[in-house]
Amino acid sequence: MLDTINSHRHADTGSADALVTDYDRDSIHTLPLGTVPIKDSGLSKARLIKNVRLETQIELYRESSMGSAQISVDEIPNFFHGDPDGLADDIAVLKKLEALKSFDCYSLRRGFREAGVKVDSGEGLSLSSAKRRELFPFMRNLTRPLIRYIYGGKHLDVNDTQALMELISSPDQRAVRSRLEGMAGALDTTIDDLPNLLEDFGDTFMSLSYYRSYFVYVVPKLDMMVEWMREVAGSPMLRNDSRMQQNFKGIEQVLTFLSKNVTRRFNQFDKNIVIDWDKVTISTFNQVRKLITTHHASLAEVLCGLTVKVYEWENAFPNRGGSPDRRADFLLSEIKPGLDGLHRIERAAPRF
Image (cartoon, rainbow, N blue to C red; front, top):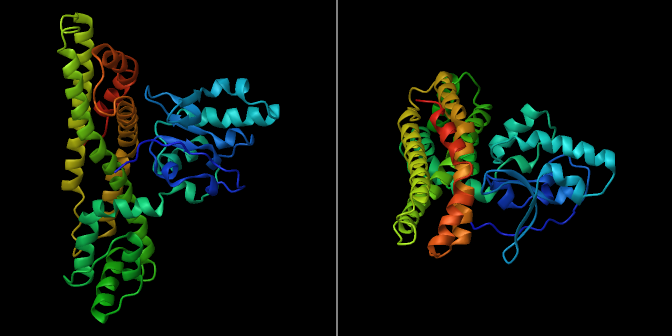
């Protein structure tokens, strides 16, 4: 589902959106600075990232053969030597963004607004068309009942939100239009404004599908990582090392807790966001929207943290091998840092 992190070199085209690849646009852990009001042209070509230790860093470049070159926001003056006043303004902006816990477009919309950072409301704060098509199957609980209701049980092959909106905007049968008028009345809107209302609601539902896609990717990998860790814990070199065994046990407990709890959350979403379109009201919409958005921040932070750890584990050990000492060093230096924070966030997450 998710590609391995690749190197992305941005050409200076003079357009913020042109500086954003689909990878960065859809990513939960990278923020291309071309989308931010950065004055220094060199700095604007870099990224803000969450690294494997869950630190916010500026990534200057990433190459498969050389790794990732990262600096902190405080280190910017050591590497960029443009206009001092402009650079000071850039650092002030990045200091505000440094505190963000994830860099997906949904978190960025909220984070930019709360930080008072003004950006062009362009494509940089929305998912790519390819990603939206990829996520559409995760929305079946919403779209299939909606299509059945509008078209009287008729099966229609709809593969993306744009096609769905076109069906709603241009009803081709009197009965279909009549059902849409009834729905518009129940939702306190007009039939002309109904597509916009449904599209807005669909964007909220799409956000849940977005986080679900990371959940579907990460959880099986966590199970693999735990088994990989158990192998090294049971190795002759480390099985009698009480300190290491305690570390392994702690890491496994947190990873298992996070996996089970996030799984439980998505199971609860499946039970709580089923919409009966025959009885839908604006209150229904608002309740479902509130339920999803209440979980946004904690889901984003936990899934962002787990994703970068899984990414780097797969990059460092593509065949899930490695000597006991190399595995142990990676677990302590890369996997363990930040896990306690994710544990606290998940424990404090909203309940259903």
